[in-house]
Length: 150
Image (cartoon, rainbow, N blue to C red):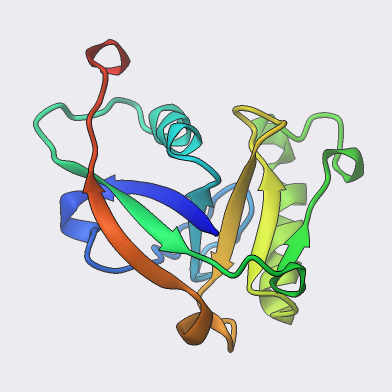
């Protein structure tokens, strides 16, 4: 299966986890976020940035992940607090993701998108023992922004 991540060109040669805390991880945890489609990855990029920089070159990373349920733990909306899409829910969501990360029970955490809850993002645990063998950066494609997004 392929998932997608958008990043600036200078970070497009490999999957580099930032270690920055986010919705599903605590600071220092080496995870990579990816969307289930190019369009979801685009929306996620737009909402997480204050502004896109039109002069900066972005790339769409195409990432191959195992299409096998034993590599994936899924978080369902029905198991989340009612306010899960808000900033106030970050501590509880970070706990879910942090516990998953530390246990290394699966390589991937499939989570609902806060932007489009019926679609999914994948959190990739780069510290999981199966990471090197199972996750592949297939290619980096040029990213073209519709001017209306900028």
